[in-house]
Image (cartoon, rainbow, N blue to C red):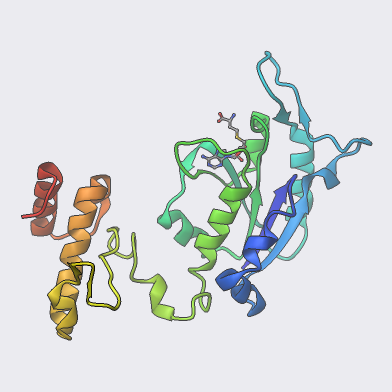
Amino acid sequence: MIFETLSVFPEVFSPYLDASIMGRAQRSGVFSFLSHDLRDWTHDRHRTVDDAPFGGGQGMLMKPAPIFEAVEDLASRGNVRPRVVFFSPCGARYDQRAAERLAREERILLVCGRYEGMDERAYALADDVFSLGDYVLTGGELAALVVMDSVARLLPGALGDEMSAVDESFSPAGLLEYAQYTRPASYRGMDVPEVLLSGDHARVAAWRRQNAIERTALWRPDLLDSADLSPEELARARAIARGGEGE
Ligand code: SAH
């Protein structure tokens, strides 16, 4: 996987991507990363990327020309055309399914906005426009890091333990993850559920599924519609969601 970013703050990515699991994944060739400075595609002395909005209003917008020139130039390099990802609060909500889809790409170009956003015509270049959520960031760099992190950890070899990306929140059943505990079994009067200490793998698996369903029903009932549940499980989850608590 090749991740590339296009941004007016090209230096902000490496401190995160070079550390910890992402750093190790890069060094072992799971993904590579290239940061491009949007100002390299400007033609004036001040390397201007923004301008005032037509129709008036506060702040500045990113001009279309540097973005078009940069994306076209970068797309024409290399053997594979990149999937071009833009960010905006007006985009589709980014989620684990989107991460799984992007993990099948070979090359992704993440275009980061700043200021009051971009000239609308720039979005014609986008294969995807993603929003992280219903809030406004100062720039798309954090969004690009979120996408790179969530996609990279799905790639083979990124996580030490191959299993750890398959059995967690949102995958594969579309539920939140079950509660997990480590030692000590009793802490400040709070006890780990007995079944988890039993060593009975079937009972543990059954408890985890029930716990995942209950947590999803309580905290994210909106996920139940698309979760992979039996009719009985769904009926019970809906009862929990309505009642606000378990049986
Ligand atoms: N004026 C715009 C917000 C611009 S914020 C509006 O009201 O919709 C500047 C940049 O930050 C955006 O171009 C985008 O790249 C990024 N950004 C802001 N909020 C975001 C969010 N919720 N998700 C993803 N990117 C976001």
